[in-house]
Length: 129
Image: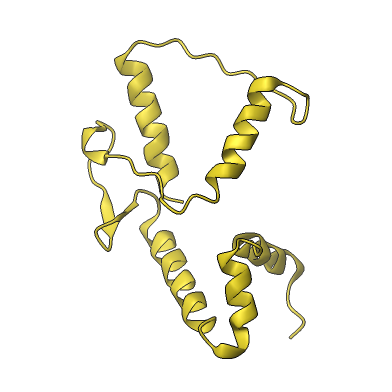
């Protein structure tokens, strides 16, 4: 979410500060490349980690101001979109507290439902209202 802009800024700052030369290579997915397979495994494991990645914005020269939601979530992208996303998650959380939706609540906790992908699917396919 909002961490991406700060992450890119931090990487750019480190590269410039240490005068590193960075070369990027495109690697075809599922090509048997050892490092690509390792990166895939780390990405899959990382999506289940409950503790979010945090970046100290105070030391990034490109970050002149960083707003925070609830004194813990940095909003370094479009503030309206970030707040809208937070409020949408809050609405979903309130909705699935209903006892008849316990199975959906459990599936959500066990990462069996990808809500962002489901939302994109509905946006693409429309509704049958």
